[in-house]
Amino acid sequence: MYILRTIVDWGWSPILITVLAVVGYIYEWPIGALVSVLGVILIVGLVVAVVGAKEKALEHSLQRLRQLAGYFNRRFMGNSSLSIFAIINSLFNIDNPKLWDWARACDMSQRIFNTWCSSFIGRVESDTRTRRFDVYLHTYLNELWLVISHYYEFVEQFHEVAEKVEIPRETIDQYNRFVVEYNAFAQDFRDSISELKKVAKTEIEPPSVKFAKELAEVKSPQVTQEGEVKPSQTTRDNRGYYM
Image (cartoon, rainbow, N blue to C red; front, side, top):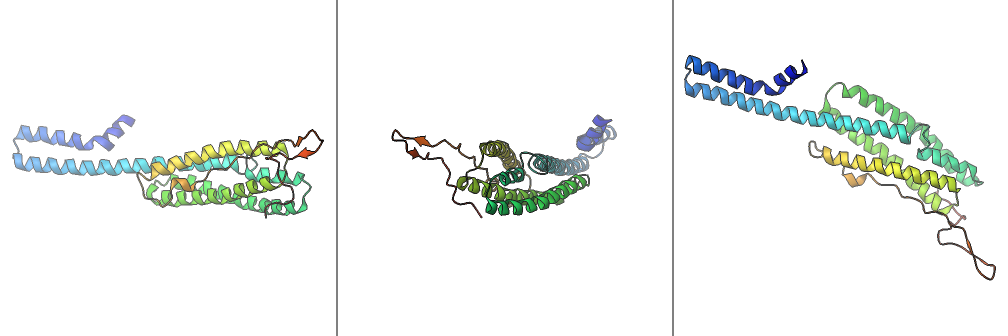
């Protein structure tokens, strides 16, 4: 049944041309009229094939976008340990009340992000079934890019905090694990944008999806022969934090 439907969808033009050519030969139809009719059918068939191929490409791009959005929501949002908000919440273990104020503000933002991402995934799942790929693809690409861009702002803020405030080694390791997986996702998103630009117009460029930066390991201070403590170059200054 699937093969028959595929033949009808993609092969109706050559089938019809063949049938008309055979019938015209048998009944000795005028060559000029027959060639004109077959030419029109061929052109229409080519146009339909091109439109169908573009629709398939748009469908593939929207499905890919849906997968990326689902992966982002599953791995970097909600209660995931790889969420940047989960990493920020670990800063409450540090005795720094001013830093807690920033972490509380991020916690409020997490609730907004969770609601936004859940709503986004639901709309993509629903609208994908309408098969209006050209209408929704541009809209949802822009929205996913916007979600990730705002999310990256928190990643960048945490990196700046971690460069100024001495944080536990466990938090650094957790953040660096996050960076590895997040950057792999960012590269996939860049590749998807590059592929999409081949079949549809978009104002988004791949480099606009930024990579997260890893944190250097904190080294213990070195002790000189005179017994003085010599700070390591990678030791963080704990006198300030990012606001």
